[in-house]
Image (cartoon, rainbow, N blue to C red):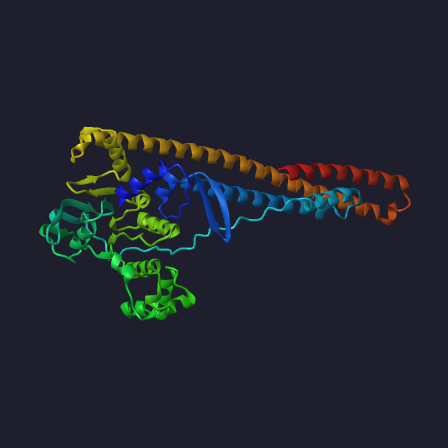
Length: 454
């Protein structure tokens, strides 16, 4: 659970020897690692820093290589056009050859490999629009033979509530009680108008069946055609011959994907998820995060993955042995208060959120929003200025291209005059025409070089 993970982090930070860690826990990697090795496309690459540093460097490296590759491609295209344009002109042969030589001497920059982030993709809209009120939980006593916790909270449409806390305190039991799988010891659970629930629990990761994936899914949705079934399964990475695998032979992560595929096919407007990321790799977790952030419905979930909770939850419900507390501003607020408690701030021992804390949180978020708006305006202004410069450059390039075409026509016209029979014996006139051609070609070369630079 989160408390044990945090204890382990503290222990490993003070550990005086070397560590090699394999983990899908991104916050754990952030707080422990100072070097990351990534295996991708059958190669291993080293990054200095923690997980967040690795993500930043990988993105920067990818963007830089792509930018350099595209710039080089344009440069090769530009030099090739110049060489093609002048290779037939005796006075410009040397220049054309020099451009081709420049291409030969380049160290070719390959396009970067795309991220090896093959994962499922989800984009669904709930079948029904519920009312504003989704769930009311009033003094709900959860447990089996004895009460584990007593909980009161409500969930509004569009909220994403993450439930955290130690093992054995009733987080999963709470979800089972809300969904009616087990009876409450006391208290009540009330759903709002038009609420349709999609429920995922850990038992689904142990689901077994002798059927193939295709048949198992089709049995639950008999009205679908085989193509529709394959499309649904394909979105969760069950493609081609994979659909003929026996469900019993699937890994825990594959069974989670199959369960989520079934849930989402029913298009519920309220997802209740019990530790959905347990068997997922990082790419799958990030996909689920993106789905929940863009999901038009409402979500309540239990998770020990702090990075997932921090990224996804708009509110956090903490269940502890002696109290249940709601953090209306999410995981960052929970972290801030936990840090103050560790430093001995006794004012925060009170489970009721104080007005001053809310005020501080709101003030901080207002500042963040103002900074976000300022950055957005600054970015828009920079983009506008850049687009103005680009448009100005494009107009100049077009003007130069028109001038180059006109100059080439004039040169061709002069060359025709050289071949006229009337001029064949007039050596002075021929000499004058040739001088004009040379001058025009010099001007053409100047225009071409200016065009090259732009």
